[in-house]
Image 1: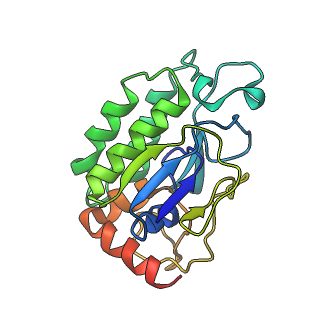
Image 2 (image 1 turned 90 degrees about the vertical axis):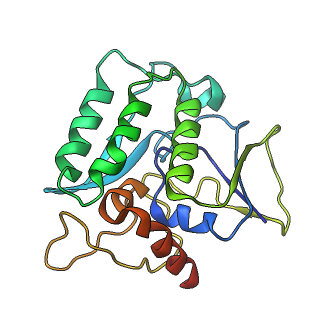
Length: 208
């Protein structure tokens, strides 16, 4: 079975849960960029609540541009801002020190294209989480899918993609009054529960 999705920046844990039910994750490489999605945005949890972090893009008509041609803007030092925010949010989490340097190295590469950054991030996280799935890219835009493909493209518009999944709660650094914040980036689980993340993802799949 193949999971087909658009490129995303540090996808929500619910999306990573689906990776455990397929053999292959295929990224739509032949689409045009679309605004108000998770293509260049991810959500974390801070002391003030959930926060969206956005990767800035070079000015232009990105919405009409092939996704592989969309360039990241480095006019402002957003990697430094994102890394500082991640450190402030998760610096005291149990597994922060085990993974942060890997994330930091990714940001410091100054990858010029959004698609390439997201693909590098995806492969890194799959490796860190030891998820047994391969990653491929579409060679043409896929209009129609069959029963061998789970198509979740463009399910994330202006907010994280909800799989109608009751996520298994884990201890979050800034959760208040026993509140569990759903649909955060996989980075939240990675820093909070580390190697136990894949077990939680497996339980999420069981609840589908």
